Structures are given as C-alpha cells and as structure tokens.
Length: 323
Picture 1 (cartoon, rainbow, N blue to C red):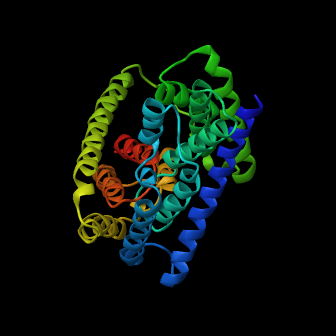
Picture 2: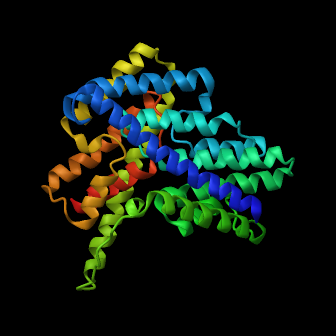
C-alpha cells in the first residue's frame, strides 16, 4: 500500500511538473516571438521544438519518442517491466518542448509513461519480484492517466485493461490506491482545470439513439483513419534524414497550426469549448478540424516529437460529434 501511494504520488507530481513545464515553454516561446504563440510564430517555434525534442531522444533515450503507451506495454511484455530511470525526466522535457512549442499532441500518454517509469524504478530499487514490478509499472501508468484527467476510475481501468490486460484481484488494490493518489495529488496542485465541465443532456426521443449509433460508426471511421496515419508515420519516418524529416513533418505541423491555431498544443481548451457549447462553428469546419488534427498529430510524432494521442483522439471525436 505504501509503495502504491509512492508511485501514485510520483505520477501526480509528474503530471503537475509536466503541466507547469509546458506552460513555461509556451510562455518563453511567446516572449521570444514578441507576442502570443499563434499564427505565424508557429512557423518558427514548431520546427525548433521538434528538432530539440528529436535530438534529446536520439541522444539520450530513443524510447522517449512517440506517444508512450506502446513503450509501457513493450516493457511489460519483453522486459518484465524494466524501464530506465531516465525515461521519466527525459519524457517530461521532450513533451514540454513538443507541446509548449506548438506540436499537436497531448500530455496524457507522456504522463502515463512517466508514472510507469517511476513504478519500474521503485520496484527495481527495492529488488521486488518481476510480478510486483509489473504491477507497479501498470499502477504508475494508471496513476498518470488519473492525474492528468482527474479521473481515478478511468486510470484504474486503463491500467488493468490496456496495460496489464488482466483484472486479477491481486493487482486491483495496488492499481486503485495508486490511481486515487495520483488524482488527489494532481487535483490539489492544479485544481479543476483538468476536468471537462459537461452540461446535462436529455434524451428527448428514443429515435435519437439511432443518431448516437451513427455517430459511433463515424467515430470508428475517424479512429481507423487516425490509426492508419500513425502506422504510416511510424513505418516511414525513421528512415528519413533529420533535415528531410523536419522539412516534411515539422513544416506540415507549423503550416497547419498557423492556419488553424486550434491544432497547436494539446487542444484541451478547444475540446472543453465544444463540449460545453461555447464554441460554435460551421459543421464542415468542425469536420475539417477533426481531419486536420489527424494530420497534425501524425506529423508531430513523425517529426520525433514526444506526446500522447489521448487528447488528440478526444479532439477528433468532439469535432466529428459536433459536426
């Protein structure tokens, strides 16, 4: 129980540190550019951010690049939960550079990897068994999700279903305690800004369920498009030279973010606005933003940026649903 609290607390502090680091980098870029980080300033800040993040990962930790969750699952499947201790702080810095500079990714996958690395480090430092290390890795990942969304139940289910692929009772208490601790720590430090304020909805007519079903199918199509784009990026981007990679991928992100500033960064404020009903745009523009988010996120990760795909997925879903 004490180890679960320690892992969850570390993930919560990691979430707070990442949020503050992203804010600092974004503010620094804004001051250097002489104004708010939007529009043409992104033509400069995005390539610089992706170059620095790519250099950092290539030089010190290749496993830090990308969106994080596959690396967690890989460590459990192939290395008994072993993750290098440097992953936590390298992932924090690389993600802060990517998102703060205007890259189109989220922070959730990164915090999950940070939490998992903390769990692995604690387990290995105390010479725990492989099974116990694996559980602490999953607990750290779940605590990271709980911390960044202020959603302990979601974090617990993510750790059990996605990371461990097991709902064994012997794992449940560790994951639950870590997830709740991570959410409490981050909430106490960051506040309510992590939570979406969802208005009340009513089912006026049972026939509306048909529309919800159609929306589900549309979300499937958007999800398959997103996965296919990510697969292409992961397959072909590593073979490109640094200059070509930056020109193609960083240039794409910079141009799209300049034309549509909603694509820059995590996009959390846009999603919150769409969900609360304060952002109203033409249906075709919302649909276009959803498609462009697929391109911008894929290009950010292809350009060796570090960041998650959870928030981009929410951005795409919210855009399609609103459209």
